[in-house]
Length: 386
Ligand SMILES: C[S@@+](CC[C@H](N)C(=O)[O-])C[C@H]1O[C@@H](n2cnc3c(N)ncnc32)[C@H](O)[C@@H]1O
Ligand code: SF4
Ligand code: SF4
Image 1 (cartoon, rainbow, N blue to C red):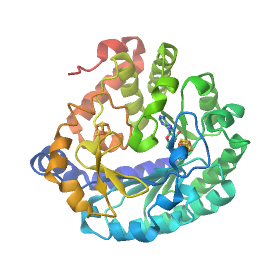
Image 2 (cartoon, rainbow, N blue to C red; image 1 turned 60 degrees about the vertical axis):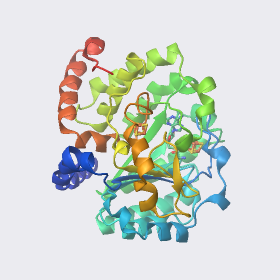
Image 3 (tube, rainbow, N blue to C red; image 1 turned 90 degrees about the horizontal axis):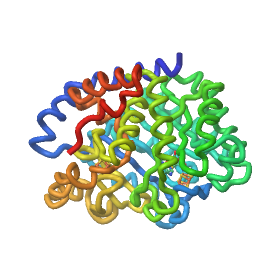
């Protein structure tokens, strides 16, 4: 019921932006570059876990993180006035004591903000629960939607092993329980868990799903990926990357999720595309808002168009407008679709991109419906790739 009202609010807010989105997609962004509507902010790389599949914990350095005053100063600019979706990630965001103040600052500086997303380990419940509660209550008081996911990569010891944290499962569960209770009384708050499946926890994927369902927890499965800007983990591809066994398993696993979930859910959209990419040699057919209207900000102020693009500049040295609209940078971005996007597995704000591209989204729905009822026809339905 609560999830439903969250979705309804999100759809209502999205619908309110549709004429502008349609204009941006069909006309404006093709003629002239538009300001970012989606923003990912990795607010620190400091972390309370040491995951096998991510290297952010190795590069955490509090001294390099922009202070709240520096972030506030950098966002005191009309450039940010179009941001609608903000995702705060890391590292572990709750290691920053000023996280709630940061959310309040973003609310002030981003006048079009509709929705905030936060990913957390939930591994330090005594600190995280009061902090996240304050954030959810603040968002409720301002009519802002907030979505929080606690990462869970296994049940019991498997989670402890992936995260390299003693009693990690127990600690994450404390945060999960508290957030689930909070969501029950806050319709602006959507809560769930996120799992990244790879060789180490492959055997536990079904357990995680069963565990989440028994507790009526929303769950999203991340596709394993390697990106330096976001996870600092390109060098792990060789050791952690999928082999045939994982590919076969994950394709089937994603198709099963398509069969079970509504074709209208954002997750189905992603799962079908991931199954496609495994089947088609990792050629991306998913849209991505970062091709035309996104930014990724890292803890030290470094700005990127997206998780795979080159460094554009640093917010402590230059204005965001100057960095984002630089002709040379825009020219490089125009080449993304035929370049870095080709094999990109990024899910970041993909649903935002999907909803803004009406015809491809309608085609997706037709195909998803067919695959849902005839998964054995998946390969025949694969969209053409260039
Ligand atoms: C980088 S973490 C940052 C937030 C927080 N530290 C956490 O773990 O939730 C954000 C999400 O990325 C996922 N992730 C980590 N490594 C990944 C990888 N190699 N491929 C895909 N997702 C990954 C995590 O499981 C988590 O759900
Ligand atoms: S996935 Fe999250 S918890 Fe794990 S190392 Fe990366 S940032 Fe830290
Ligand atoms: S490389 Fe990936 S994240 Fe970057 S714009 Fe392309 S699809 Fe989006």
